[in-house]
Amino acid sequence: MKLALITDAWHPQINGVVTTLQELVVALAPLGVQVEVIHPGLFRNKPCPGYKGIDLAVRPAKPLAEMLDRLQPDAIHLATEGPLGWAARRYCLKHKLAFTTAFHTKFPEILHAALRVPLSWGYALFRHFHRPSSGVMVPTQGVLDMLQARAFKQLRSWTHGVDLGLFAYQDKPLDLPGLSHLPRPFSLFVGRVSYEKNIEAFLSMSLPGTRIVCGVGPLEDSLRKRYPDVVWMGVLPRTDLARIYAACDVFVFPSKSETFGLVMLEAMACGTPVAAYPVDGPLQVLGADRGAAEGGVLHADLRSATDQALLVPRSQARTRAMAFDWPQTARSFAAHLVWAKGAARQRPAPFTGLSSN
Image (tube, rainbow, N blue to C red; front, side):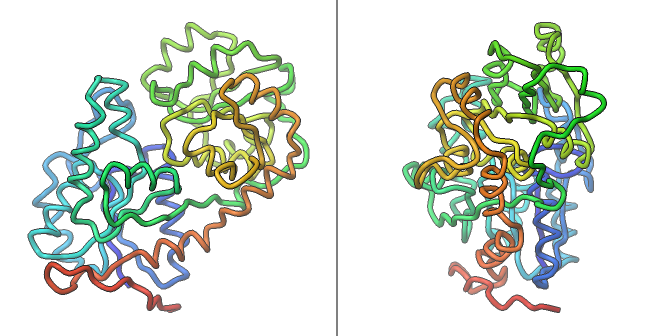
C-alpha cells in the first residue's frame, strides 16, 4: 500500500508531532505500508510568525498537486491543519478522493491564549477542516469526547507510541558526568519553551535540588534571564535526551492544553516518574481516566504532584510506558486508513488488507 502522509510538521522541527510521525513511518514499514512524506522542506517556505524553528510552506497548492498526481497514492492522510493540510484537502475534494486526518494539537486553545481568538471561532475553523475527512484520528478518549461535544464527526481513537529501545529503562537515575556536581533531586522539563506549555508553572516552583530544561522556544531568552539557577540544555540529540531522562528523578509536565504528551511516555520508559495536572493528556497517559494513575502523580497542585512523584517506583513508570508499543500503534493507524479512490460521496471501505511484503 502506498500512503501519502502530508504534514506541516517534520524534520528539522523538534516536537512531539514530528517524533510521532517519524516513528510511525518506521513502524508502518513491516506492515507493507510504503509512506511518502510530503513536508514543508519540499516547498518554498518561511518561518511561522512567533514560532522560531517552525517553517511553513508558501503557496504549496500547485507543486503539491503535481506531487500527488505523480505519486497516485492508495491512501492519503493529512496529519496537520497548516498550509499543506489545507492544500491537500482542496486537492482531495477537487478529485473526489477520500482521506483521513488527525487532531494532534489544540491550536484553538493556543490561538485563544496568545491572541485572544474566541475558542468557538478556532474550533469552528478546525471543524470545517476535518468535516470531509473519512476518519479524524485523535490520541485519547478525552480529546475524542471534547471534539464530539463540539460537533466533530468521524472521530477515530488512535493513541501514540514510544521507542522502548531508545528510551531504555534504568532502575536508578543515571549518574552523568556533566550533572554529577549538581544537587539532587533532578526535576526535568522537556518541550517548547513557549506559553502554551505553561512552563512557568514549573520554573516558578521552589523545588529542592536542580531544575533542568531541555528545549527552545520564543520565551527562552526572557526566561533564562529570570531563572538563572535553572540548567538550560537547549535541544539535544535523541540519544543524549534519553540519557537526560534517565538521569532525572522526576519529570514535570505543566501543560494543560495537550492532546497527548509524548515526552511523558519517553520519561516513563526510562523509569522516570511523571508529575502533572489532572487534565486530558496526562490523565490518559498515566491511565488515571480508568483508575489510579500509574507511573506518576496527578494533582491540581503541581508542587504536591512533584513531591509525591519522587516516591513512585521507577519500575512502575516503565511498566506503564510499555503499554504504548509502536507495533500495536501502527496497526491501529493502518486500520483507520481508507482507500483514496472510493465511490463519489461515499466513505470508502477501511483499509484492512495490509501486505507483509
